Length: 96
View 1 (cartoon, rainbow, N blue to C red):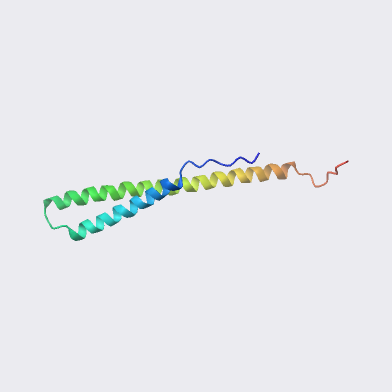
View 2 (tube, rainbow, N blue to C red; view 1 turned 90 degrees about the vertical axis):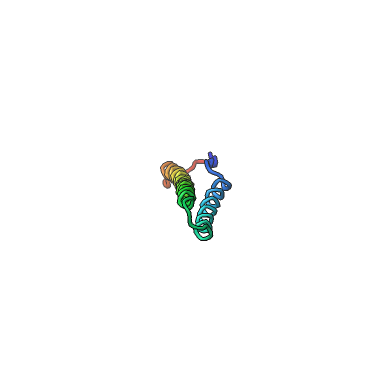
């Protein structure tokens, strides 16, 4: 009756998304600070920006998935509680 809910994302996947976001932000800052001016700077900044955006989307998806998992667990627990309360009769006397 008490089967645990299977999580679709792991802690490693969550950590990977967070680390990827942090590394991309750091790389972008370092790149902007230390690169000399030139035509290739725009290309680097474009690729860096693309990396930041894609990792930000991944991080947002991971956070959304975690929240969805918590809502599912909450709904299952609420359904179990509702079933228990519906089956409980406080006026029933057990004849043993």
